[in-house]
Image (cartoon, rainbow, N blue to C red; front, side):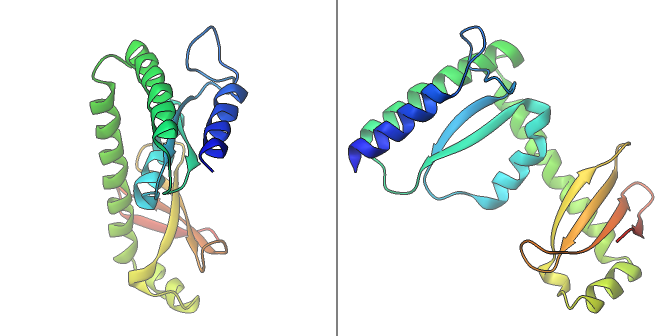
Length: 175
């Protein structure tokens, strides 16, 4: 089992084509390797800013890991960190964390506009979705504070879609 994890990480590391000796892969993104139980809510926020920062995370193992795997992951992640320091500066982690917090606050703002909107509440009722159990994803559109928001009936089925204008606190159903 120990060797299997090591081989898996080694294959992932080698299979990623890198540009000019940096940690930038052929798709233009930096990669951090992870293991352990995922923090789903934080991962969603990271996904929201992923394209802006060109950072992706690859889970290479679950909760049971070896010291060899942890050392290998740490070594690769240190290389990625150095490459990001070179691109964004030594305080890139603070800036990145700040952007995650901004993304979180945007999600809160979107939900604040949605739950106070009568049309949105009626649509939830018609789809039998509880107000305190709304699953959504939001995509920023052509201007700041304007989002397309998919509301899910279950984890994979979109019940309906709305546009949310945070600045003007408006919601439009676009199904």
